[in-house]
Length: 348
Image 1 (cartoon, rainbow, N blue to C red):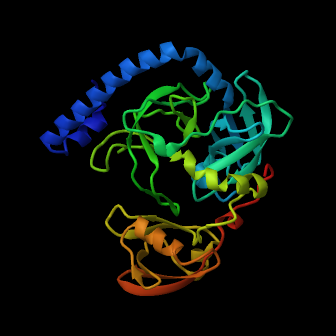
Image 2 (cartoon, rainbow, N blue to C red):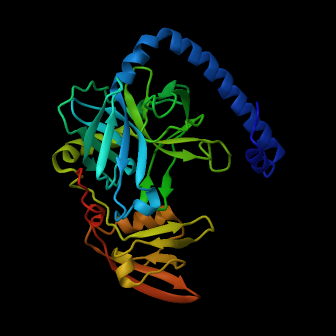
């Protein structure tokens, strides 16, 4: 099994025993995947063709003045999956603040779309065609029922990339620098480079997750294992009605304070302060080290977010303690609903 040079260099940092375990693990997964894939494709070739009728490509244009234009770009693309006769589920950053959305159907036809809903807590986004279009949906499955030895499939739109067989290798918390936290996302191997918005499908042809990220350590934080992270479909179920009716969730909305942070150094360092956001207005700056929230010590992103979010609904005042150049500083930050911070897009 070939290993790229940069990955090999990282492996050398690990103990010899760990390296042997990792190589054995990859060989085992590869052999199992090949055998299972051969069986699955022979038995279910017609079903796969049918599944692809419900998977679309999504191409978005974002205005230069949008708040996410610099961080996420003004041209974004990925995949989505039809979940009812007029709604398409995708990962939300593809369509956030979009002024123009184009949906590519399985028959090659391209139609204009619009943003129906976005949910920052999960990362899900919903789009729908502007023109009347017959859409064939896939059934929503149960992401809590996935087992480590189950065959699951990453199926991006064929115009975005190639579908692949995968295995779930872990369910552990994920904390993102953009005030984002998931308790039990789905980590899979091997990596599919067209993960963005691609549905994760079980052997019954049901949606169990939506592709969110490339992850370099899918198996464990201690093991270099390039894979993908999927947002579990079960997180959609309690907010589905709200998203379709209001374009956002109406309950359990986390208070937003507008900070990007990093805890890789063993402490929470502010890397960016969102312009005109709550923290920006009170004077918190990049390189400030966050030490406490509402009188409680915090030492990583998980504890930071959970403490902020346990303060109450958006609008609540958050007391943030920081160290700046060796000096202790205290700030009172009036939190907001993150949906109200971002621009209202023309497609929304």
